[in-house]
Length: 417
Image 1: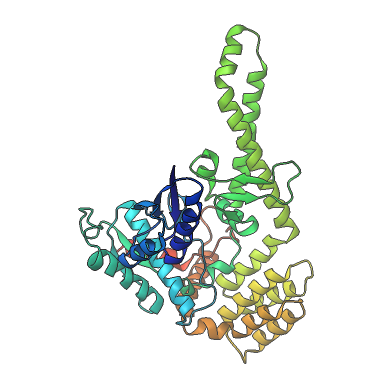
Image 2 (image 1 turned 90 degrees about the vertical axis):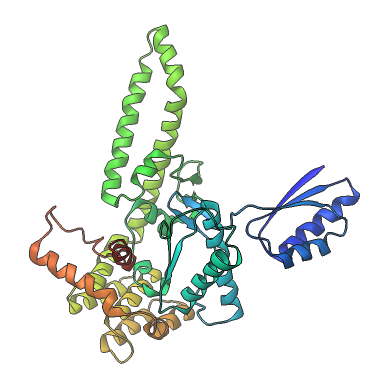
């Protein structure tokens, strides 16, 4: 009997899987094919051989898949560094996991990129150097895809360089679902759904509406869903007008598409309803307006007043208050600043846990040595002042999406050379 075992590329996991197969050897004959998610080093093969007491492993294969594809332009490694930025054994193992995941992606795409990294980050340097060593020194033949130098580029950046963007409320479809409801392996849990469907699949590969609107903002998204419902209602009326054999034949032929569209309409209506309910319950639009004023505005007094008002409002959840406080500290200073001290005092009244309060107290120390706040906020100030002087050519300014992530500036500079 043949058995295929798919394991991540670690000696411990391989040994456990082989031992499990070996224990079943007495029950019936197994021929095991061990498929690994990354490159198998010689020392790992030796450990596999030593663990294979019953000689059940007949093949060892490499299937480069140490990553989780989310959509055609996004993947995840499904783990987090957390706040551990010290050179500990745990953080070094996490860095090794990044190297494994990215190199696995490059091999699956058949890319041998030019590698660039953020000079100020030791972790980015280590990731870039390890991938370069693997692709250009240790396994050059495996990465020989007959490409021109510079056809592809790998840019290794440190998330800590821009702590602002993750603290802001997001207002595009995919980002809203991810932040408010959570997306795990393209699955979304609906906690407030009135029907039996508590989990839905949200993937651009098999959902044309989601593919077209995943980057649409909240306002445009509402209009798109209304159009989706209107189109379906029009089709439903046509399908009800069955008066002849030809009409029946047409309906049967179109029924699979009709049923698929019905499911799509129900899914996105339920999803938008869930998002709208939570946005209203948590007053997220009010919070977002204050966030954008802190980050992009030029009036410090106005930003301070908005933050203090929301910290005193019991309708605003403690987590949203925490984000507001962190943004204000990032923008306007550290300890010894009177306004920052007042923000801290107001925050302590919101029943936050001690870990969160310690994070706020030490936030300046954590990020102060790793980011350039002038670079992070200067462009936001410039665009904010310019928009107020000149005005928006398309009409009223969208106050919820003023901020432009630092990554956008970096990628723009890369494209310009």
